[in-house]
Structures are given as C-alpha cells and as structure tokens.
Length: 500
Image 1 (cartoon, rainbow, N blue to C red):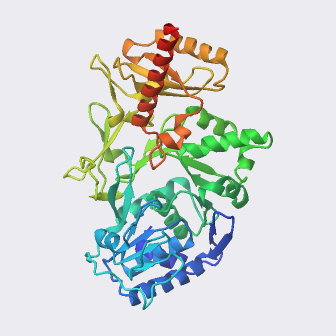
Image 2: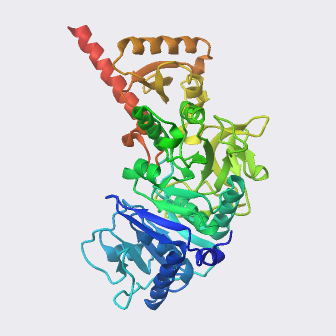
Image 3: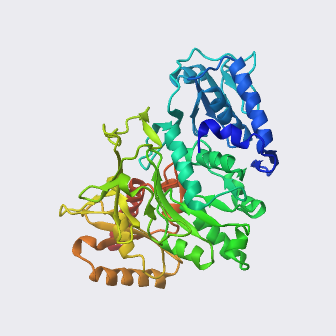
C-alpha cells in the first residue's frame, strides 16, 4: 500500500461506497468515485485559498464523509492534517490557530467570534477564507499530527509517518485477507488514528466503509451488515448483554449476519467475553499495538489463542528487558516521535529508534504473546515486592459468580485489595459465597499474591465512563481511589455500629 497511489486506487471505483449515518439516523452514501471527485474539489479550493505543501490544516469535527474529504484533500495538496478530538475546546479561534501553527481550521464547534481561517466541515474554502500566516515544513515522511491520551490521561501529540501508515495497512491486508467483498463499520472518532487507517485500507482494497455515531451503533451493525469490526472491549461486552436480552437467534445474526472476524485491542478484555463469542461461532480476535509503534501482535483467523494478544507481527523487531518489558525497533514505526507532550515524560523513544512500550509480557513456546500489565500500574507491596495487577486478576478468573474483579493496592496496609462486581449484587448469599471462594483461592497462592481486602460494586468499573480514560481503557488510579473511598465508608459504618 502506498499513500501517494491511494487516489488512483479509488478514483474509478463506482461500486464500493462510503456511508455516513448521523445521530438522527439520516443516511448519506457516495461511491468511491464520487468521493474522489469531491476530494479533488476540496483540494483545488484549498489550493485556491492559499494552502500549500507543508502547511498544517486542522480539523476538529464529528465523524462523517466531510471529515474524510478534508483528510483526502489535505493529502492531495501536500498539507499535513492535524486532528483534534471532538471535545477539544477552541475558545478564541485566532489564538487556537496561531498556537497550533494552522493555515486553516475545519470545525463544527461553536466559537465566540469568526476568523478568516475557519471553515465548516460541509463548506469549502474559497475567496472568503484566508489561510493564517502559518509556518510550512518540508514535505517528507510526516503524514499527520494526532493526539493520544494513553492510559495516563495526559495528551501527547504524535508525528505519524507515511511509511509506518503504509506498513501497518499492508500487513493488515495480508494477515486478515481483507478485500473488495468486505464491509467495515467505524463508530469511534476519526481523530483516533486507528480509524483513519481503516478508512485508507477500505479505499485501497475497494471495500465499503460505514461511518456511524456510537449512540446508534448496534442498530447500524444489524442494518449495514459489516464483515469485520474493530472495537474496544466495552462494545463487545455491551453487545453480548443486548444479545442475551433478545432471547433468540444467534449472536452472529444479532451482529448483522455478515461478520467474518472482529478485533479488540484497545484495552484488556475479559476471557469470559472472548469465550462467549467463540462459543457462538463469532471470531473475536485480540490484538496489541500502540500509536507510537503501530501494531505489535495480533491473533488471526488462522492462528489464534484465547487469552493471548496473538503472535508478534515482527518477531525480530521485539526484545524483552529482564523484567519482561517489551521494546520495539522496526524500520517503519507508525510514529516517529512526540510533539506537545503536555508534561508527559518523553522516555518512549530512544535515540537509536527503539520504542519503549511500558508493557510487560511473556511469549509461550508457540510464540503467542500474553500481556502482564502496564509498567506504571505495577503495585509495590509493603514488603518491597512488585506485582502486576492483571497477573493477579488472572489467578482469580475462575471464581464463580464474579462478573469483574479488579486488583488495586490497599491505601493503608500496602497489600492487595480487590473491587468485585457480583453477577447479582443484591444477592447476599452470592456475595458471601464469593468471599469464601476468594479466601479458598488465596490459600493456594503465595503470600504476595493474596487479596486481603474486598469492596463490592454494583456495576463493572471497566464499563463505567467515570473510570475510563479518553481512549476507553480502565484508569487504574481512579479504580484505586474508588476502592479507598469504599473501604473508608465501610470502616465508618462499622465504627458507627460499634458505637451504638
């Protein structure tokens, strides 16, 4: 796959389509050929308005065909697209444009005052739009500027490379056998670079792509019949719950009836969820990657192992430190470095090009990678022993009646606690039984692996937006704070009972 050849790949395709469905359910559809014609129109008017190669064009807008058009038009003009998340606050547009070095800003946000370098997503820049006096870079490998929150919640700007983009898409097409008969649904923001990789992939191979709001995603999946999906674990958990409520048919039919495979990899997924999909004949495949490096490992339809994130895509590019942390060094990483790190430590990129992942993992004898957890999530016990919470959680995965168990440090004793969500939180007998089963499991473990304190939750924290990062991963610090607050409330209740 080559980005400079992308327009030639989709310009004459009158059969494949790009579909947009808005929050009201209104549907808009264009063929790849029509998409190309519109992208050329946008690119010509960008040029007429003064945008030149090396200029940075910003976009802060909701998903839709217009978002894709601005992306494609920027590529045609040699400009670099800088993608902002939907929730980005613009405030003073002039200050925003200057601060981010933009020649033009495409936005659907309500701003307090106009600015000559602003244009709405459904408009085209013409004589009334004047690019800001912005710096221009030399055309090179830089393809786009994107933001990622990571698991820390701190925004990091990433320089996305053309070569890394081409490499990831080429390997995906090769390993998953995607082609012109496929149909893909996207519901996560296009400002998330993974979604743009999917768009480029579909345009390159001539597959249909559907852009939908997450509020309507389950109806869209049934109606649009995608052949593959890429989504975070919360989507698959919710889909499973909704399917069980329907009480009939198969999970495959509930998901539109056309699914060949589904991929998850933006956060850890429960093994029970994976097993439920495979039991229903739906191939849910776990994968692992970072915006910094691109994809590192994935399960495929031919080679998969539940509980692992799959085989290394480039085994020769991955090494392990003595403590199990993964390092990646490949000729074409997805990102070449950071910008605007907003205080985040810049220890990811080493001078020799090695990317430090911050993830711990192990390879089994067959080459499948199992992740043990994030370096920053490691719990240091009062004994000085370090443990990975995900590794401890796996030891209690078989406790009957538990929907979710999250391991956190206890605030006072420096040992391990757990937040437990029972299948029926109001069933006192079940809660008591869970306590007994956890105690029994503890007896078979070493002292540093034992859970010494429990708090119970009515709902899983992994599915609760209050305890998730912007990229839909569990926030371990917020989970630990929940545990500390619940434990303190329980101590106060007991003290009040003793005082009566």
